Amino acid sequence: MYTGSITVADTPLLRYVLGRADDVLVLGHRLSEWCGHAPMLEEDMALSNMALDLIGQARALYAYAGEVEGAGRDEDAYAYLRDVTSYANLL
Image 1 (cartoon, rainbow, N blue to C red):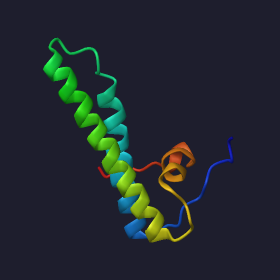
Image 2: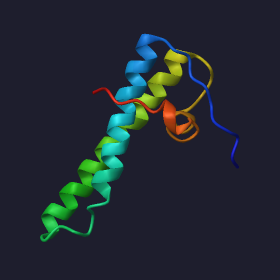
Image 3: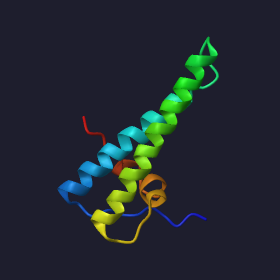
Image 4: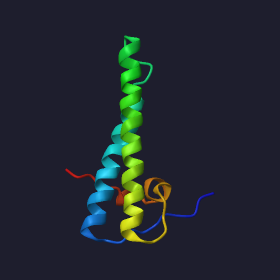
């Protein structure tokens, strides 16, 4: 069920946490795309485990962002319900 995009408060700590979470979420998803393309089974399993670790870090950071903002949002709201232009990159 699509509920529309959410708007996030513009505080420095929240921007930093969301930027860090967005970075590791995108990196985890991009790394998981390589699953099944490695020439050796060990590398394939290592890439999958690293991708899962990055996505887990993103979940923890999005949960922390929910605590910081105090709006009652969970990590799914921050990861998937924001407008594409509100995603951040720490670089």
